[in-house]
Image (tube, rainbow, N blue to C red; front, side, top):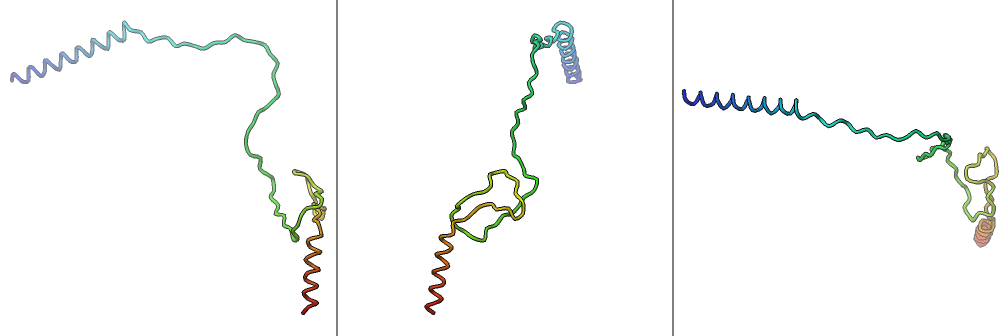
Length: 111
């Protein structure tokens, strides 16, 4: 019986202390008011420049293959130019191909 009375007293005291703490905090300690960052209004011109970063993707991919290899003699197009079917893109130096042809002809003549 004595244990019950002391535990009830401890519970009541704890409840009263908690109620006292929250009432003091609520009524006497008001929260700090919010601080607002402000700046004066300045009239200026609006700029029409947009800065952006990213990767540019092409609309269509085209595979271009070469049937002949060698050094380029002339290049008829620039990076980003629009090309059409049959348009000359580059001229390859024919000296290497001509030498390979002569070599194959002389090998054929020896056989």
